[in-house]
Length: 188
Image (cartoon, rainbow, N blue to C red):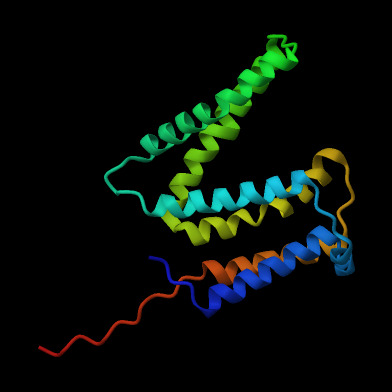
């Protein structure tokens, strides 16, 4: 069981403040005019379910290997998605061209964005705990802003750099590990 003390709580508040700075580009008044679409609510639901999945990983029997958990997760997900795939095939008859580009995209989604990412996530939860793993996940918006600057030529704003520093400061508070104090050993 992971302890969630004042330091970690403060760290999460700092991370959320940094994320809000990043998302609003420093204009926190933008939060008052937020409108949520169905897609936003679906994404929020997905994020909640993923956090639930992460907590469940810590409850697994230590005798069950990570690969078995991964196989079961993918199998259950496939079974749940099959009816939706059937409806799409029946009503929409999507046109699919199996060329090199399509096969590359399928391989990326199937191997990179699914198999490898879940394998790494599951192992991270096992190694550093669900709290620390979830905290590091908050770097995703920051990395997205940096990737947009590098690959899409987007301008990186000073407020994005500041929010990145705030997010990193919060992560340091969350992931800071205190060593238990040792009692002096009795003299022999």
